[in-house]
Image (tube, rainbow, N blue to C red):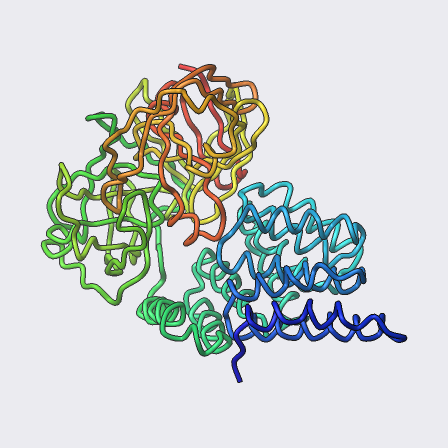
Amino acid sequence: MRFGSRATLTALPLVVSLLVLPGASTRLSASDEIRLQLADLLFAEARYAESVDAYRSASASSSVPMRVRALSGMVRSLLRIAEFEPALRTASELRKLRPEDPHVLSLYGDAVWSTGLFQEAEDAYRAAVARGPETARARHGMARSLLGRGRLEEATDEALAALGLAPEEAEYHFTLSTIYERRRRFDDAAQAMADYVSLLPEVEVSDRAAWARAQVRFLRSFEGKRPFEIEKPNELHVVPFRLERDKVIVAGRINGGRTIDFIVDTGAEQTVLSLPVARQSGVVPVTYLRSAGVGEVGVRGLQAGRMDSLQIGTLKVKNVTCLIKNPPLAGLPTRESEGFSPLALGLSMIIDYEKRQIIIGKHLPDEAFDTELPLRMHRLAMVSGTLNGERPVSFVVDTGGEVISISQSSAGGLEWDPDQRRIPLKVYGSSGWDPDAFLLPGVNLQFQQIRFSNIPVVVLNLRTPSVLLGFQVGGIVGHKFLSKYRVAIDLERSVVRLKTL
């Protein structure tokens, strides 16, 4: 049975207001319970936007336990529809009611995580685990945090602990699949993703489940092969590059074919090929996977395939996943190019703009740097920065990007003169043109002791990639920022190090 939430909820307050009789508090409690049951039903049917309204109505209860239940459901619903900042506001209100409750702390951690404040989220998860080790959501939160820090075995243990406590939670299976994929255990990753699909609400089968099934097919296509098999895995590889139009370009070969140019692009999750190059190199697509980036196309289905071999300089890797830009985008000023990221291979890197070389390897050499930023690898390399001295946001470290940019949501949280001139820009990214892009002057940006004062930044619509990633991307730092430094992105130590040139 399905209910229309708005009609039901507008009637309930009238009923409650008429019950000024002996036993009214009992009837009030019963009315609150009915509201919560309706909200829970809407949530179970994946009608998350409607369940937000229902939980909000139920949160007006005078009963603290009822309010806690209602606000908890509201946070979960808001996160499901990627309303990250409202979720954090609601979770903060919830935490005031039950500051020591491990379930409340876990939900608060989820909301904080969704805004890109990963260390603050981990602190909340650790506090929740300390108070209630049996709290499944807290253990799942720790799994995601440890995954982002590259502590994969510990992340696996936490994810399995969460599933032992709540095996019916689809999201936990998804996280476990992601961890197994990072560990190159593709068979286990495929099974965990299949378990995720089986637990999705029926209403979501046509959308989320379809993409997840495609991921299962892709992972299982590696059966009998060792993904990302690196020849001489413990060696360092020094690769020269050239700089063209603020793009770092290296030479490489696919499947032993001719030499082609790759843009070194740490803003890409996988090696990316144009359709002509994929065909010429004999890369056969397996299925379609979801991708998202800057541009009005938003979520973009791209073909996924496997390269038998990839060679960049002296680095040789077998059985490498890749995305093929098919269907290609039309109307762009340049052709879609090939992209390569050592991070996608699970390798660390040093990029030296002065010497025009990249050092790639599992273990980077010890050397002195001026600045060290904590790194969180949540599909993309993320570091924390501060806007205008007060707003912390997470930035993608993107060697394929050209400028310093912030998201519309980050810009909306800043205090600035509404009469301040905003200069419209024509910006295109991996998902086409961004018609809403503009240049915002007078922004202060800080990464620990590195400060940029009163600079112009590009404001982009990063809503779609944020939804796909599951957290709010605050901005992107590209060539304009990175080229001033010798940059080390160290997955082993989970840091980004910068040394002024």
